[in-house]
Image (tube, rainbow, N blue to C red; front, side):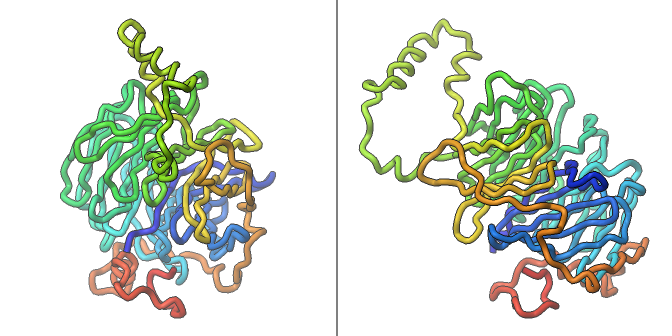
Length: 423
């Protein structure tokens, strides 16, 4: 069973005049969304485009800086602003803390899958075995990484970690998180990296630099470039999110501008089946021949621009200058583009497979919890603070092991609340 697709990125959301939310999104076959607030965190599920269901809400906790949920399980990793060096692993359904771990510096980001949990500090990365939280490896003296930029593949067979190899140019270091050794280095951009994203099978990685004008996709195994897309020509933007669709055909990209782009990584099947068009009789064919003929005396940068792909579809948000995160998922058997924005809303778009162009908005949901329903008495439990790692013979250790176990072949018992993880 393929793990759900996942996308996690930290940003600020202003939902009203008195509360600032920090959000992490986990999108997949079972779509979920986690939001950290000044007093705790909230978890949502999105099984249909018509409703955003609030499944957990705690308001008796500290200001949450990072919250990462392990797919759709009950395991969450949280970091608070008052204790930025402490990572807490919690079971939100039971309202208990499984373990916690402290680091030498502030935690900037946390990534996890069913095999590994990675904690990113500004100058180091710590790789844990998620089943018992033991430190397996520490990558020390990494280039200064003040934003905590890194990406961990969700695929257990290709469990790779990517992080910047330089703070002056766009080098990507690929590290094998299972065998604990460096795999390859990719010279992706001339300027420093701003965003990284693995495909869900872990075989490809998308990169963007601080300029934000070009998106590149590389083969993880040998570092070869397989796709190159141009996001824009004039404006240099701050790219905050990139994510592959589950099948790896689409790549979405969000920034601090009002436009979200979706790139297609292969030709549409319906176009392949149509009779070939004589490109010599089209304006584009004439233009292409002109560029090809002039390639010998045009600068390399100019010819590269003409060879770069363009967005398959795009959407225009009702604002600009804010951070956004995005994902391409299938909900109710329809491919959707989801955008969570710092204006406090989740926007839903239908990704039209037949035609490209600009997409109209289909649905929007508020992220302050007023759309959803939750049993407050059941979920208002405060997390218990247990400052020790789980004992191998303890119940908490077995909870951790069960949380990260691969799904059973015969599926989960959907009517059993004790089944871990729930779906």
